[in-house]
Each structure stands twice: as structure tokens, then as C-alpha cells.
Length: 512
Ligand SMILES: Nc1ncnc2c1ncn2[C@@H]1O[C@H](COP(=O)(O)OP(=O)(O)O)[C@@H](O)[C@H]1O
Ligand SMILES: [Mg+2]
Image 1 (cartoon, rainbow, N blue to C red):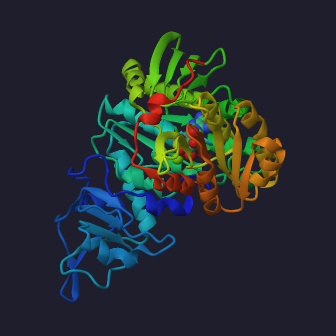
Image 2 (cartoon, helix red, strand yellow):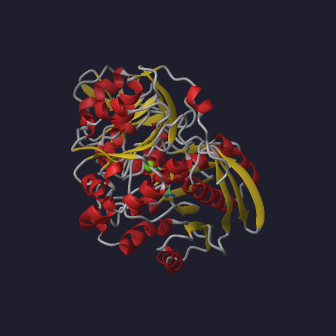
């Protein structure tokens, strides 16, 4: 499993709160009406009806992150949430949504009894959508979903009350959870929709019924499950079937599979097709990109009008994500200029391109480009291009610490070996590899670029740290389950508290 947030990872990623902590999200009656469930509480030995005596301020599916006031939904996933009901009450849950009456409850503790708690969550999601008159934007794609969602949240927060998925909540649980957390009066809401297989996006996009759907890119992620690139493109295009009447989609014109996406948009009858990218004819066209490796200065033509903005993160892929987000803002009638101006505040999150300047305990100063959150061939190339744009200082080197890219099926060895060329072109000095697939890359690299190769990431940390020299820049990237993130942690642990020293001294390349 590598699609962030899809599948089993979900419960660990949930935080208890929606946009506004203190606001009432669901009263008991509203939740009962939405789910058709029974409002209960155990009074002594009997169950009795309870009145409108609770109101939830958020929704939680994980007691570890439950906030006081949340409605705790006891889902049956890897573990049975019903086992955590008592702990939910203990942490201050306003009520619990269950499919069987809890055996042990504090006296009078309220619960909402439904036939199936997953269906209950979906019912809350549907009701939340129907009572909200704001605009909804859904984002899918092989990479860039979370970044684009975060850009949209940043842009729209300045324009109205905005609700957005937490982290990468993007699967059959995360999407209804995000929707069920939608405040009634939100002006805008943004959903990330992920997939590992065909037909996963369809029910989720129909649930969200977005006014605008964005497809960031189509790349080789999950080709193992889907079989071909065309099948991946069609699976991403499923997002289009949920778009509301009169709605729009935003599609990547430079992508080799654009024509499939475009055809699908036509076929399912999306009224307005907006394109973004570098190609002539894009509705939102990138005309100039320059970066110092930390931020980017971007110029674009947006429906024919020139627009220049600063983006708080480097990478042409981030600049095109920003254009996709601006396309969506435009489609919902938002203020594009204000949205573009907000992008200066954008910050690539931990694992998605954040840069850390560290001083190792021995005095060696290095910069870490933390791309450890996930990887597929397309995002790997994007990250390598950022590494190439960063200039080491004081005789330092460019170093790549790479983990396996998973779920690539039979093409995996070739796709790993294929990274040798971009790494050479990026003037990377040394490549370290973790995992059996990166062995194919190591074999394809010139001898002088080969650093250590190990089977598991945790065997790499000491070797990498021991080899580092003053001024080195180290990019860390791999599929989530390759666990290369632990390298970043190991580097932090081996460092004295952060200083800006390296940032000031690094000789970053001028506009490129
Ligand atoms: N449009 C894009 N094309 C290729 N790679 C991208 C794109 N957008 C982001 N990336 C890279 O993909 C990785 C994951 O980004 P993220 O926004 O978390 O995507 P997702 O939520 O789709 O997994 C990051 O390392 C980032 O640098
Ligand atoms: Mg994500």
C-alpha cells in the first residue's frame, strides 16, 4: 500500500476536529435523522430514549486523536471500534455511533445505535453535504493531491469559511469522514480522493458531488493493480462522474494521457473543461518558472490574462499544481488574484519537499530535502529536479538516498533503473539505495555514483551519516513503506538543534 491515506493507514491519520473546534457540528436529533439511528442511553439496567442532550463539535474514528466533544464513530476496520467506546467516553466524546449497544458505559452516556457504523458515517456525510450550500472541490491524481488540496485550502481561507481534508484522508473512510465533518456554513470545502484500484473513486466522487474535480497528473503509481497507463488514466477519470451538473473539471494538458481524461470528461458530460500546464492552448498556462531552490517565481497566463506570483515551495510540478488549484478557484467564481497572492505562504509539508538545515553533532552542516513521504517514477523525477536546482556550498555534494518505489508490477526493475539518467543529469554525486528494487538502479549507475545499498532503510542511517561532509545536500525519497523517512529522523537525531546557518551560506542557483 503506497497511496497515502488509502487503506489501513487511515486511523492513525485522523485528527478529531473539523474547521472550528467549538462550533456545534451535529446535534443528537440531526445525527439521528441523518442516519435513521436510535438515540439511546443506558439508564440503570434498561435502555431509554434520550433527548437532544448532546451535540458533537467534531467527529472521530480514533480515540488516540479524539477531542472532547467529538462524536466517536466505532468503525470495524483493522480493529473493532466498539472495543474503544469506553475509552472514547473517557476522553470526552459527546456520544458514540455504534451498531451494538455498549455493554459497559458510564451512566447515562449517550449512544446512537445504527445497523452499520460505516453506513452511518456515510449517511452523516450525505446529510452534511445536503445541508451545506458551499462549493466543493475534489482532487485526485497519481501525485500532488495533498499539495494541491493544501494550496486550495490556503487560497480559499482568505475568501470564506473553508473546510479541508486532514492530511491525506482520501479513501473509503477518509472521504466520508471529511464530508461528515463539513460545517453547515462552510463556504468552501476541499476533498482528496485516492485509489489503489479501479472503481474506488466512483462512489467517493458521487458522495462528494464536487462542483469542480481536479486531476493533477497520471503516472505509474499502482500500475500493478491496474495493468496499464490507460487503465490508470481511466481510474483517475472516475472522479469526473461525480461532478455536479453545471460543474467543471481541471485537467493536466501536458500529460501523455490527457486525451483519455478529456474524452471521459466529455463522455460523462462535464460542462466545463479547464486545462492547465505548459502547452500552448492551456487555459492556465505556465509561461515562466524560476526558483532559488526554496521558493519559485511563477508567471502564467490565466484565461489569457498575465499573472505573476511567488510560490512558497520549489518545483515545476508544484507550480503546475498551483495552476490547477487556480483553475478550480476560477471555476467556483473565487478571486484568482487573491488566491495567487496567497501562494507565497505555501509550505511543502514534511516529507513532501520540506528543506531542513541541520548541523550534525560533529559540526558538519547539511541540508536535507525531505521527500520521504512517498514516491513513484513521476514524483521521483520531480524531486530529482529540485535536487538539481539546489547548489551545495563549501565543496559539498548532491546525495540521493532512495528507497524502493512500490506497486509498479513487472515494470518495476526498469522503472528503477530508468532513474539513473535523471540522477546523472542532475549532477548527483552519490546515490544510496534501500530495498531490493533500488538494486536495479544501483546497477545502472556509473561506479563513481554508487553509495551503499542495503535491503532495509534502517541499515542505511549510520553509513549515510558517517559519509556526510560539510555543505552536502541530501534528498531522501521512497515509497512510504520503504521507510526511508527514518533516515530523516536519524539525521535530525544526530544533529544539534536547528540553525539557519546553512540556509544563509548555501549558494543557491539563480533563476533557472
Ligand atoms: N504534479 C506532480 N507531479 C509529480 N510529482 C508531484 C506532483 N505534485 C507533487 N509531487 C510530488 O509527489 C509527492 C507527494 O505529493 P503529495 O502532494 O503528497 O501527493 P499525493 O497526496 O497525491 O500523494 C511529493 O514528494 C511531491 O514532491
Ligand atoms: Mg495525499
